[in-house]
Image (cartoon, rainbow, N blue to C red):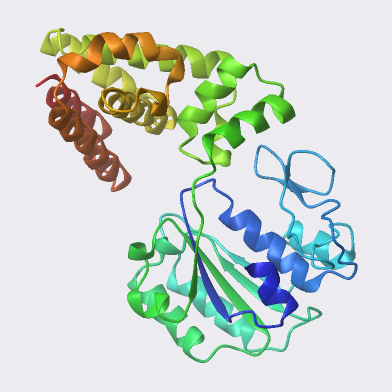
Length: 338
């Protein structure tokens, strides 16, 4: 869709990319900006890549984002491509949150820059990363620009979902939804490109939630396997253990905020598989645990499982809203053990 718009010279002045973190929204936005300004576009992307730690480069490894239309793909090596991918292009404005939010001062600075003519780009780009973190003031300031956009300037907003953005801003953007990457594709990528064993690639892919960024961040084989086993073992025992031991489990998980999101994802996937196994055993995520699900699934009511999954979703939202992690996790394990 993006390539077709670029070829026809019908690119909307504002676009909203939504989807889970690590799914490719920002990578696609940067690649699109390169494609619009590349001096040597071609049928294949020769060097547009993004490495595991998020740093862009122009080698021929890691993640490749081809736009499959003739003479549209950025070369990755010309001067505009290299400047955009390194975020040094004067006409590529990458706005990130400063602290917890995108602040009004950042939008005012952007307005001042956009009031001047482009320095060298044929198409000027503004990428607002984590656009859902605009506060009311910065959102309203951006809205004024979108209502009267500067000539030859394209805005790309990246956010998890439409509901996180002011409706007045959404109405002025063309929406592009980025769906989760299929699990089998993530597995194949981790095996073929990252040299992971099939078993461990399956584990990492199942924990990633369709996000290649998350998959790359947890691709350490030993950690992923050991941590997943610990969580699942505890989930199987949680209905039979005392409250004291459950609370200790909650406290131990809340200590490490870097892995807490993954721990909650493991819990959800395990509960989901318990519910799904009763009806479609071939559709479970944790395929290596099939025999364990067979022993458990008939003993647990599906509605109770759905209630527990909902409880995890509520805790995830609370933690994202800066709730106390330990108290939130203690409340969760009590609900899970009911």
